Length: 121
Image: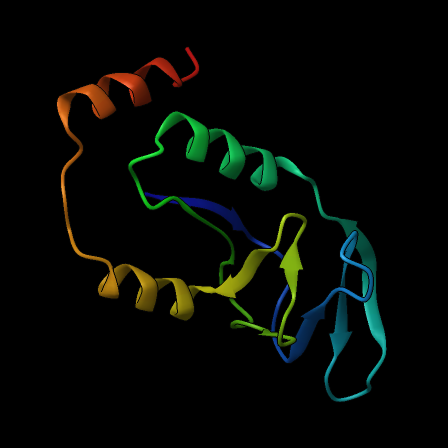
């Protein structure tokens, strides 16, 4: 079971990194300068990962925060950059590789019913 949080942040010839695990920063690769404001990394995916692991103990639950390319392309991500709870920050090509490598399966009726109860609205 994959939990994905998609982020559409400015991109191009930049590198995203986190010096402290609380804020995500963006560095312009040609100049080496930070651009934009630091982005606070929420603990939502950490909490979601913990909750889903508890709700579905028989499943392999993995969480990712995914940077989506903009018209300027896809920036780089500094090695080891992760959201709180050690949730990896990856680019779209990386998550597509994960999806290709993950065997396809369908949720059992009980899992499907439990997931439906989590839907808002």
